[in-house]
Length: 79
Image (cartoon, rainbow, N blue to C red; front, side, top):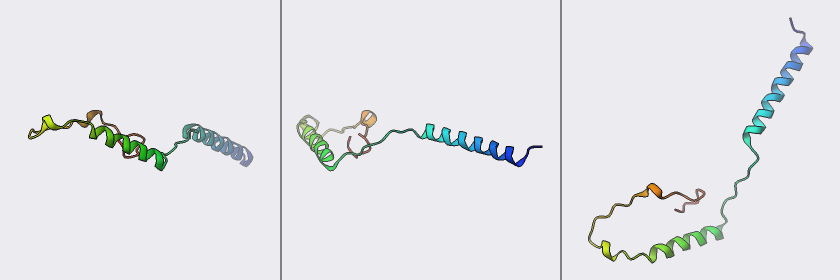
């Protein structure tokens, strides 16, 4: 039968180990969101790139856009 003191020590060790595991799992990285200027520059770059594409050969034809390789960039709403 354990004494109250040994039970308290065991409880403290378990809690300490759990906190260490939690701190390790949570990581220490930071995420930086794009500033408004960066988002504006990205949006402008996408607009200019699409504007330079000649869509004339596709006039009157059915077109399928495969978005398999289109991925969002940092969840900023840009592709």
